[in-house]
Amino acid sequence: MEQKQTQERPRSVRLTYQAAEMVVAVAIFLIGVAMMMDGYRVGMGWAPEGPEAGYFPFRTGAIIGISSLVVFLRALLGKHRNHELFVSRDRFRQVLYVLIPAVLYVLVTQFIGIYVASALFIGGFMRVMARFNWLKVILVSVCISAALFYAFEIQFMVPLPKGPLESLFGY
Image (cartoon, rainbow, N blue to C red; front, top):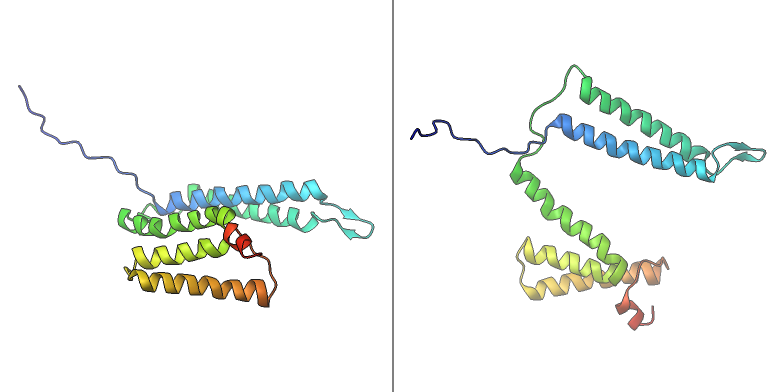
């Protein structure tokens, strides 16, 4: 039986600068389209008393959409397309260590309020990333959230999303 002489190389996904530019251009283009649609919905014209509510958002969305289209086409067809690796796997993993908790923070804020979510976010980073002891983690995360609560809710009177804990204290 003949042995296979060549070993198959594992396929790896590589994100190049060109691909990253194209993905970001598409994402920004969609934001521009959303701005244009919303501007059109609320009125993008000129009324007798001046511009309607969607006048500037529609035009800003159009500028964003056209600019992102230019970036996309330059990345796709340009003379200086960059096929180098945009980010290595290890660096991307480090980005995910921050990105995933940040996304969870935003999602959890809607259910438990921004102050409790902030305490958990700060405490989680202190414990997992920097490996502080539990006493420091609890003290710092609770004190920072309490200071933020005092600043925004009491001093500035800016209502931020609150959860069941704040309701328990009458806020």
